[in-house]
Length: 195
Image (cartoon, rainbow, N blue to C red):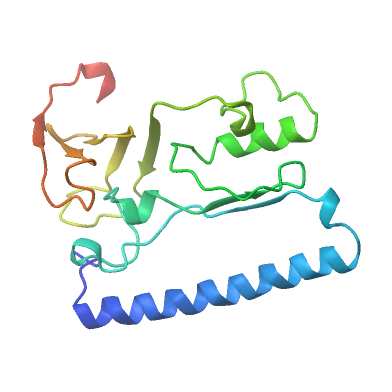
């Protein structure tokens, strides 16, 4: 069963509906910001906005989300607005959602608990890679079982491995940012303890 395939008309409709949802969220965030300003709390409030995943929205003829780690599903918005650093900026550096707890605790002046994952994004520490994990919960996209996959993303490459498969994908994000050209289908032999 391939429930993620879509036609162009379906993709356009999904994009239009998603734009509508984003506008609704943007309006609601604007109301929150206006209320903070009106209450005199804006200068004492850090705003953090994040999403857990993206959507294919027609990329590669797919819709919804699923076990293919294209940019549209793994690059999600993260906004950090802090009155301590009011200068707006934008970065394309690698960050992970697991960094948020550590960063929020550090900003609040609290020590993270022992063993917490993630780095403080405000400490100047840079990641050289991000690991994306997906524990599939349904059979889809031609897989015989619910796929479990791990994707390693660096500034230049994206590599995905699938549990139980002897192949993986490698993309060069610099020369092929839309992921139309696989650099290589990786033939993999994993030790038995990893399968």
